[in-house]
Length: 119
Image (tube, rainbow, N blue to C red; front, side, top):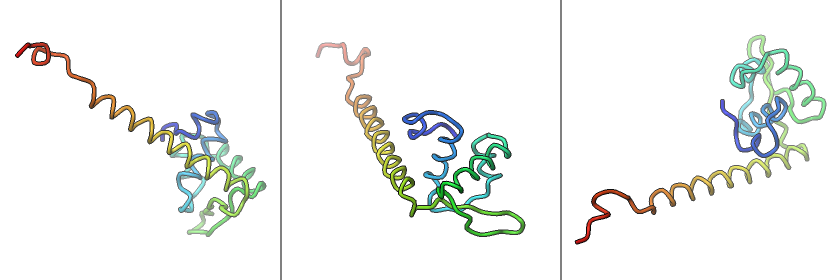
């Protein structure tokens, strides 16, 4: 998983990468080990961050599958609501920037033999 717009805006830290993962997967519950693997961080560090976020009420336990505890983002938390709004704004900015790039690429006149000939 690459660095997203949220981390580019707020800083590329492990905590922010985990938070961005939570925001990107807000409708899904997740296993900490799977998250660690996707983010390419150690499992102990991932568990450490999730425990801190659980204490802040950013995430909550959702269910157990086999022996694996799953978590989900707590959308009722006021700070998470703020992060979700910021995340959506970051996505809008990225979409606008990409749209502008596409427009500028398609509207740039080609420079080549056909465009330099006089008819």
